[in-house]
Length: 486
Image (cartoon, rainbow, N blue to C red; front, top):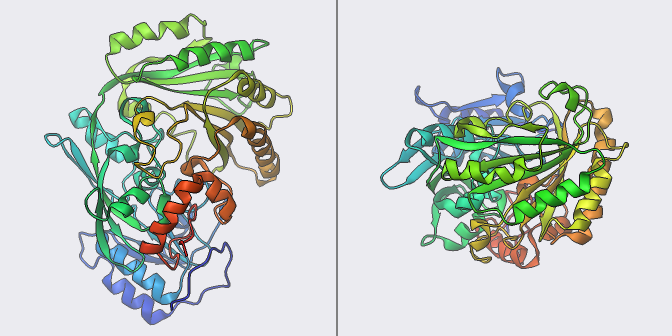
């Protein structure tokens, strides 16, 4: 029996077989119009491509394969197996937990595979595995269509989708996985299969929320939905002062009654003095920010926004704007090369007890500068998809929260930021529904108990059976790893 691959974040230095590398170079996109290439340390481009988005993970892979197409992905998987290399898969590189890079192993980089083809008649789009959310938005908005997905345009569609796909249109159209029709997958043995409701349906179920555990998706077919080109979106800010709990309860009461057209994010934050993108009198103040996106009739949306205006925000930045512009508004703040940490969970409600805990932690004088709390509204169409239809295990939740370290650069701040986020998450744990959103999960990828808790026992056990069928040796384990059922 072949020996199983195991989780490991540190391995002895790897000495690659020069003949094997030369052979790999000869078969990776050999035609001039393709963009595949093989990078070793010292090659031009290696330094840029070895990093993921989260600078907390400074790793040096032995080899990077930039894949120009599905055939390159197959070759890379087979090379990794033959050479016994730890293997990470990179699409957009936006993994909070550092899954987009690996120490001493192989990165299979899909970023050259960024084609997006929209069929406005069939209301579908074929999206290659290395495409970014921005690629999809730009092509879809030519026809006033989009794949419901994400909140940052630089995010890779593949990683976002496989973890579920929370985004600005989810209450109206569901998660990204709810709009996935089929996918082309390179399995752990280098075979190519199609997964859909009728072909490999067990794999299709696992790919919708189970992360990168089962293979590399080289192409998705999505249902596209009518959005834009103009939406009503933006952010409102309130200086909290002593009215934090009262204000948040009023916001909560509005959101609990919101129609499906409105998706929102509530943020509790004290912007550090280094911020320059806010009005000067708000820097260093305790703030509540409510960011919204209204997908529907814009006149009706503006009428609805009066309920927020009645709370007299200090800044009201909700305007009619391009959907592409709204999707990319956070790109600068969330750019590459910064340090990030995130712990989150699901809530049945933004209860008074939840609000009290958040206010206590977020507006404490001891909160580290680069730290904040965010709460997304779920519900709507997300909650109407049957619980067993996908591997996304928290359909019953009305809110998702995240305790976050926000884009700091000094490693000396790591301990304080992570300790604060973990403390807030622990305080909220008794008030939460359990589980976590796989894409916003920084801890526990190598800890079975944490991953099982993230998915929930029922979903985890079913994922384990899918894993045993399609990846019995756990080749794909640099992820929120599900062990093959035995």
